Picture 1 (cartoon, helix red, strand yellow):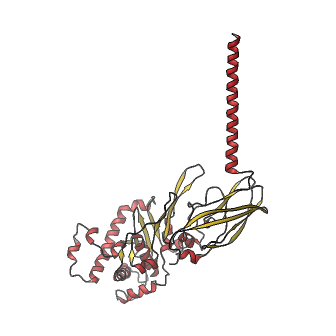
Picture 2 (cartoon, helix red, strand yellow):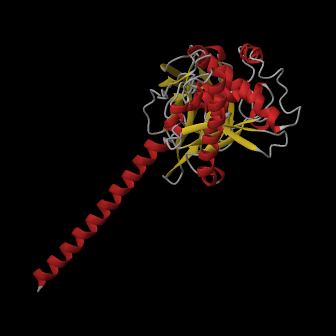
Picture 3 (cartoon, helix red, strand yellow):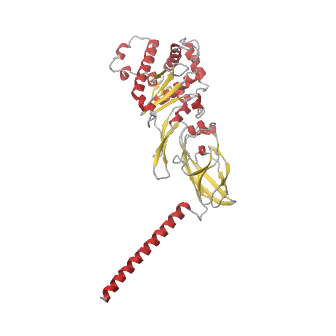
Length: 407
């Protein structure tokens, strides 16, 4: 009986010991994780950003003079201008700590320094320093290249050391169309940034006047008056003059829209700038839409960009009150087979012997018919703003948010 009691007590002791040891292990693990993550006793920080280590020149240029915040700030207590695209994450060692952040010079921005005050002790802050961008370097960057972001942080006069992180500066032709944002609860959400397509609509490019002069030389219209005449026929005739002159320039459809970006965080589409499209006489559906939108804006006709999964086309209002809207399938500007668009009509067999002017007018009208049909099939999804769909007027309101990148 006595030996049995001894065994029972021994087992109880072993269980108590196991519980105590387990609790100690859990405590040590919790403290270790806290120290590693929050680093309360270490003067440490890290360089962070919302776009997976990528800078997009088109996003930086188009927002440089606006107050729009298209890329959302990272979750947490943020200080500074989130449009800088890169931040320092650190924990405040005391209330009212003064932080100075210096960024070394790169080919794309000058050396810069920013100072911030951290209100609360022990709180983690995400601090966006000011960046002195070299806008011309961004505007002329034709392909992605790595850059070293080197930061120096000083807190209350104490040097916290230097950190370095390699980023990718993307091509100016890469349009950021969305990214995956981590949330505080551990989940993620997709943030659409398709509004950046408006950055490639450039109604003030110096080559615009050359194209408009060529269009006037066709004598299709005597002048470009926008909505001043006030008739739908007048507006459509002006738009046709633009269509005709692009066909005379022998534009060709090119489906190239790839981006060298390989990421599960950000998504981008390659877009030719106005200058690139005119110079190469090649367009895909996105290139053609932003090119035509640029010309429409230049003659004071309000264009819209419509994107559906895998495709984009352009629309325009035929009246100043923006009540009547029609659309164009810009891929039909090039040398195309009409049977690919209207297989039931067998139009290609009737094209022999028609003049360039007759062909141009026919493709223009068929382009409107095809695009109107396409829009009618997706109108509900577009108006519901579903993921993958876009409808944006290139209006004064949009221009207050997104400026042209200037190429």
